Image (cartoon, rainbow, N blue to C red; front, side, top):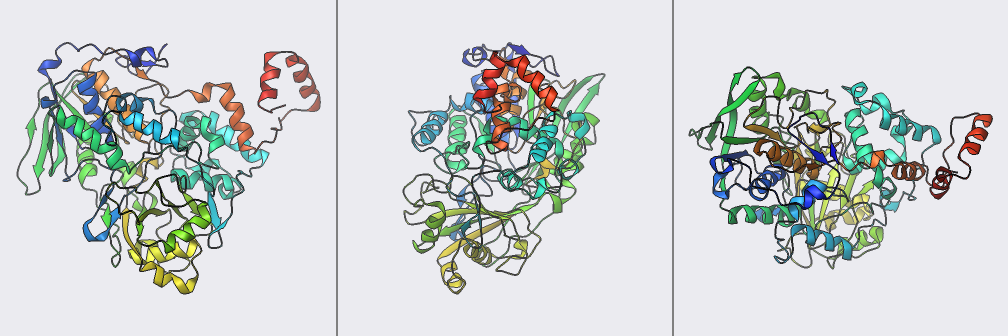
Length: 597
């Protein structure tokens, strides 16, 4: 089935036919070259689609990266003597169709006989994800009961948001549409810490998330809906993609900063005609473009201006708007079709949080971890199964331990723990300092306090760990309240040879139903960009349409009510008439199957 889109050049499909067909070589592709700004998951995925589906020769593809390493926000590495660090982790679910499509064609780093997708699938097949404790309080005591504990009225609030037209939510915050009771519920603790939503973030993005993952609602309390790669995201995702691209001859030009793009406008036609760039020494590295040169622009970055600390140094909050933000601002001045970056990057107090990678070097701290998770942190299997939130933490601290060793070269006795706090500007409960002012050792001490280490042992056990804090001023910039037009379309109207990709581009599907802050969103923008600009004769898979499937809607409603039957706002006579109407029908059977009646 082919579906309607905003742009007639893009086709969407909800079946397997398009995915299974091998794309034919687009006419004239041998005369084109491609330049990609950035090496995040969107740019890497776009290049892979250029090679596989657009049949572009790899030696005609060039990346321009301001850092000295690929991967963008998908990082994970050892910073010399400071220890392991990852700025964040990316959760995935069942329906990331664009990524699954390209991952099925790229050899895995763990086993070259398998694809990235194969390795990912069997890792989770053999070791399914599940959390034994999602929320704690009072220094490591389990708080959650595996339920959302919502009232009937609060569930109706959620349902109302799910069906509100997008246009009515433009510029509104979550606090504008949810009651105070809902914002202090167990549901909101589960939700906000899993997805990193704040009360002041976009109500529209909240609606999109609810609808996008409505098929996963029942698995949110125990995180059984989630899947993870075997190793950190850099080793399991980025490295095999880079290797695939290098093997095809792609060029990676590191330490190259793109600051602007020149365009020619003629009527409705927009052509990128020059990349303005320089190296780390200020030398001009600009590149002239023709209409046969394709440009893929990663505009904006959630991890721009990340700063790193160590055991004895805090990570600094840097609110400068350089890098991707500077470039996007320069580009946006040239056309209203290129978006409004200031909407996303102008208030770092509402878009920052801090993470910290703590490495435990002895088996003493892991014993406290095991009391909470009911699993050994050693052995390469699921440990926390996702984040554990300390609900009474002033920082609203959460932490997670993925399969160990999380890094291929990690010593067998080490356990890498990822910690983050949504509120970086308030004092801790044990360490009376703002999280953003804390060293790695101090963040470690605060975490040890919240997992139940006795106060008189915290200082000693903190010395058995090393920590790397990371401050990210724009980490949730993509959640800031917005209006349509604030993000440019992947392929703007009239664009001939350029596209925007990543978290700050607007997908072309109608309605735009995918969610930012996911690797799938980056993959979708990449797929759309390549297919439209190159004329690939295949359709892009639509966002999984669970919100239109009555089965998922019924299941989610009952799950939100922890198994209770929803109380319909009908008088007794109306209920009686409705019961008579559906008696003996498939509707009655379905409602009974899902415990609605």
